[in-house]
Image (tube, rainbow over all chains, first blue to last red; front, side):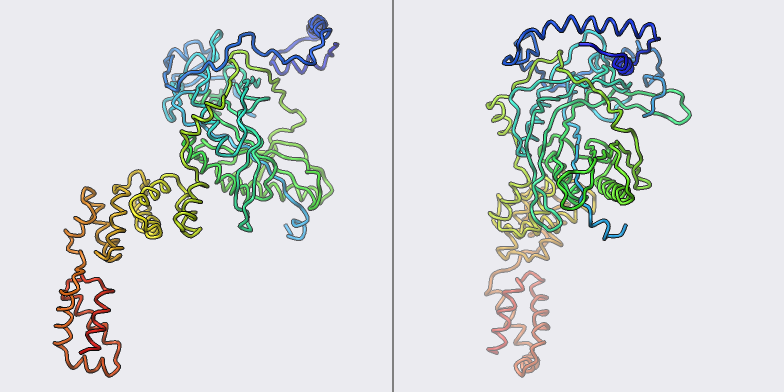
Length: 95
Length: 486
């Protein structure tokens, strides 16, 4: 499977990453290497195989509905790059 | 718009409703869902998306979603897998929303609404799935940064997606009303659109009448009341017809409704559709909803409005209108149902509910939960009237207010304290009537000569002598007989 430069640009946008032209080409070549390697899996016929979604066979791991705040307001804000006494502050976003 | 043009087109509408679930804790972590606390206090490292933290499914969320599915005639999905919906926005610290994609917990349901012709119409429910809410970002004027509060991040939601079965704004309104009623009966969401606990997006397209292929649809967001959903649909239908009439094409867009102008404006084009890159959520194991679990959930479900409506019209033989009003809210319906456990005078109970009780609640803007009297007391009042111990006027205008003041009393005690118990002792009443008639020979003669209107005067005297306690029906009858034989 070969992917092209537009896919790289689209992925970069979705991941909010920016590459210069040289880096873009490197990324394209790396991604193609990965995809080619993964392509080996297609050699197997999986037509009648259910997709394996989880490695564990566990199901229904649930909690009861009890409320407990596990971090304090101060702890929550401690690692924020920008904050005031009430809020996390982020660069202005408007849709 | 001229109705001749408008009538050429048929609108096709589907609604997506998000309902915030009334759990104590969040969908995948234990932090509180309490509304109105200080910003950034209901938190956990899971909500904040710290590395190395793992979510866990809140069992109550599953049960609430299943309840809604059962109430809307859905099939419940046995094997559920959660999904990650990736998007990059600061109100979502993890960078993805945990939702359901390929295996929504409920599918293929329907609800019935009354359309404009008063006919039952079935509106399909495509799916109901579980997901989580995002935080709240505030873009304050003059502020160079956006402020984010994560209290709401992770609060559980269900999204209810309808089939494109809705044909006009009235049907949309009826559909939403029914959804709201159901979530409130089930006690899974408070159903308040103005406060955002119930949210609605509308997919709207128009096509020429008789066409089989739907037009290009436009999604309209940001309507914060039932009325605004109607207005947005009306506006959008006309906007699209106008474009088509002028030879244009409809852009596949997401549009924003502005409540001030009643119009919609383009938010983003679907061409640059968000690529959410859904994939199975690796942090949550699959969820299996067994038949046995569904049966337990069913047992825990209250009676639904359609059941009560049927019971009230068929078993209690109430008029359609009464049943409609009484099932409007769950609490009213249940209070009424309980009155009817103590008396079989169903129509009288309905009249009490819709008359004196509703007026009292409306006047003080009280909820039925705050009503000081018990269903048993109301049934007592009804029985007293039925047995002729007091008349309805005395019961509703005097005993009822007295009871509201002294809710500890029984209706009989209240009537006795107010000296309102009608004397049903006909002998005593007859003596009084005989005396009244005997003391007025001249008027009796006039009456017998044909002046029937004098009956009222005699009646007045009798009521005066009995201090208003006589049953007017019985007194009237006895008085006529006495006058005729005089």
